Length: 351
Image (cartoon, rainbow, N blue to C red; front, side, top):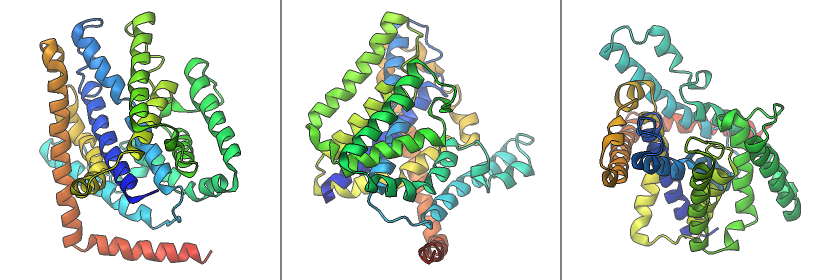
């Protein structure tokens, strides 16, 4: 994998997080739910939501792609834990004083242990996945290319295709909100990297595949009813195809020298955007039901307004995350995390 393609993955992660915000404007912000089913506003918000629904799959695919050939370092989870705990604690404390009675001391204490709560489901699932990564990587490297292809086929059929059209009770995927689905996506992303599957077609072809998948989902709703959401799920084959197509497209993207710094910055702050805007305090007071007004706009204004709101949220959260990074560096928290991480890595290496 050359350097330019790695910068493409940086931009891919940033785009995935922007799509997360777009999705939340529609769902949690109720821009979509407030629209009249079948109206122009409904179809426009539905189209935006459908295009963004692959966001979580994208992030997990990127993890598998980036970690497939890296040595496992258990200490990496330390800095991530500190980042999550920081936002969980700070926003909970702010909520405690800003809205008396909304949260208690128990909530502040539990904020230090984000994995044990459901406030950040993605981090909780990722935390479990993290400790399985070296074993998944070892398995994938032990397999030959043909066997990895068979594994991909099995993952697609039993963890995406069947759960979408013929759900199996023995496979607890929870619509994708779980460790099992993230692990499946990790495997797919890793196989794309190891077997260079992104070289099978041009970037333009992958982009067309992304939009074709969106068209299929919208056509499904048109044929089977506006409220039919069979294909609108993290585990849906079409949503999975959207995320794979975007990953491969960005693998083919060559980033110019003048944009590399921006790509690296946006990638480094992307997870912070998620943690900030989805924190219980921000969610309850600034996101939930805050974008219902979009449903009442003229149809021509729906998409620009929705993208503008998402961009504003993304920009503010990016700035906050940038300041958080500077604060950690100034207070020596990053150095402390590096020391703890180093000791964990050395301890693991001796095993």
